[in-house]
Amino acid sequence: MALREIVASSCIGEHALSCPMYSTINQQTYLSLSIVGLLIIIGLVLIFNKPEEKIIIRKIKEHVPKKEIDLSDLKSEEKKIFKLVREQKAMFQADLIEKSNMGKVKVSRILDRLEGKGLIERKRRGMNNLVVFKE
Image (cartoon, rainbow, N blue to C red):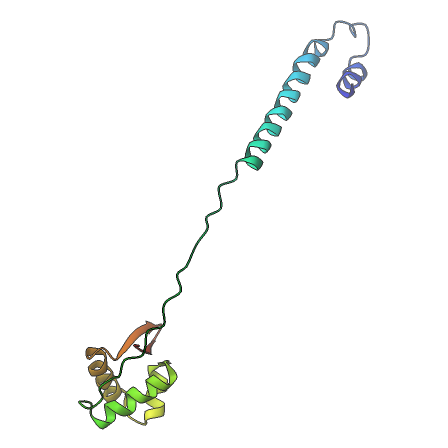
């Protein structure tokens, strides 16, 4: 209806009845209705074809009794560093240096030995290492 009113108001004068815009009204109406229908069909397909939800089941780790760690073959400085790490579970190497009152190189070498024995693990975090107690 709106399209017919627009055509009627723009085709004024002696050739109003033979205006070429009258012949395209039906084509434009069918084209717009088909576009709307297509959009509705696409919308319905998107709504009803949601992907199936995945159910994630995580197994809870069984509590494993802690094994005794043999510290008899460690030097006193290694024991001190190891006990600091074990108490905190994880700490930055810089904090470990500060708390142990030892030099950077000495702590780094001690950590190398402890890591070699499988007692701790170092993880790189930016410009610092995170020292983690391995359980």
